[in-house]
Length: 333
Picture 1 (tube, rainbow, N blue to C red):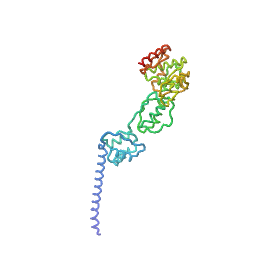
Picture 2: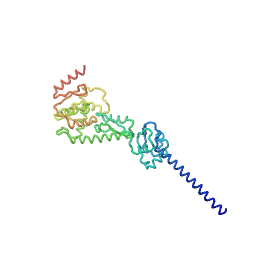
Picture 3: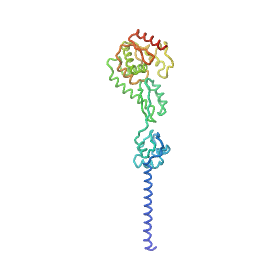
Picture 4: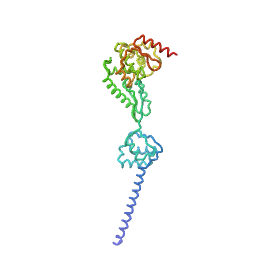
């Protein structure tokens, strides 16, 4: 090949190479532009949707979940966008609410911020530890097993928030911590002169008050009656303690108490023991704890159910027997 032929072919090669390179840049730019538009554009989701990202999910799995749920169209663009914005390692597991037409960019922000859908569970006051464990076991949005029944009275019934996948044990742990925190505070600020030596005794008495009345405003008065009886070294004679002595909180008694029950000695039966029971008979709410640490100052020594959920109070046995006869006759009508 002559020198002239070599010179003439070089410009032709460079021209074609430049053209191919330019076309490549153009195509890349178009793809990049279209990918960016897809990343920022409203997504295909028709209506708000709650999605679950399992723990341990990587970027690829997350993008596939979003694709399967109809949140995004192109998992690859989602992955590239997450990496480009340096948020790929920040995406969290949990349950998230994706709004209708959410873009990939906004979906990444939702997963990054970790604002998961929260749930709540309300534990009623006065439940035994057996009953509380059963409530937690039956909740479908909690996970894990509960191997040990907590000590009676060690939990604070309340409404607790959680996210899907939280363990049942974690709720119990929070209930224990809440009880300890509030009991310490209330005991340290208790009324002077109470016939209670320890905060544990206060908790035992609070559990009896809790089971005696479901009316929060009445609890300080009920607590005042028991405080008076303790000061006078009278037996508390509380029916709920008899019931607990029979069942130990494992299940409802399923029947009314009998005279024989009242006379049958158990460690909890306050008709037969001269002191507080050895432990709580239920898990108490704050109002019962407050009632025992700040009881009403009263001369009442007795009370009887009035059939409306409340109680009639008396200062002596004569008044009490009169109340009993009256309310029995009323309730028979």
